[in-house]
Length: 225
Image (cartoon, rainbow, N blue to C red; front, side):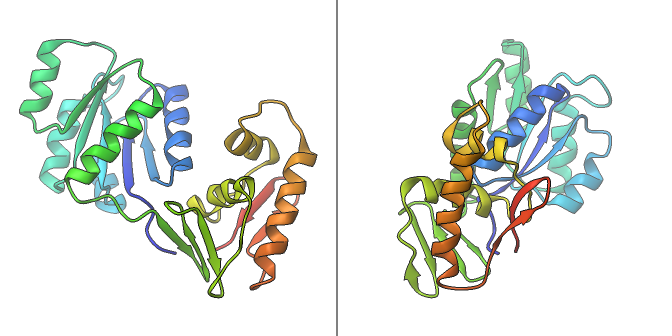
């Protein structure tokens, strides 16, 4: 499998916000390591090797976002975005003095966060190609192509969106409600909608190779790398 768009370290102590941000970033092709605090930040950075960090300034336990940024800077040269609920000038100035690449104020729209992440990654030449490969399957998100065995699978728009969810997070099990939310943005449970499009996607993929998307009994579906 080729690298995802980038590896993002997220430090956020609000559990609900942390989960929402993680899900949104992963659905866009990023690999995310989410932490509630920076107590083990040295080990996390050494093992995860992030391409960028999004740090909450005010954390309930351990060092604050500024201290975490200082520790990260000693270990790796990566872009850092601070997030905070307080739009205080002193905090902004301190953040930029520590070498922050950007600053975002809560509450913020996920679209704004994504734009800021892509901007700092692009400036630092860390934004990878939007082409993702899993085994013999190549997905070009920029041109909306899915290629296997040298041939375009000629997917419909919905089939392509469904496949994109899987290739961005291979080996992750997605339930039918999760797929409905990510692809169709439906909150109501309609298993037939998922099954119809998934069956069509599988048929097209399997004309060119072995099965990649598998059913996980009682849990959902996964694309196995």
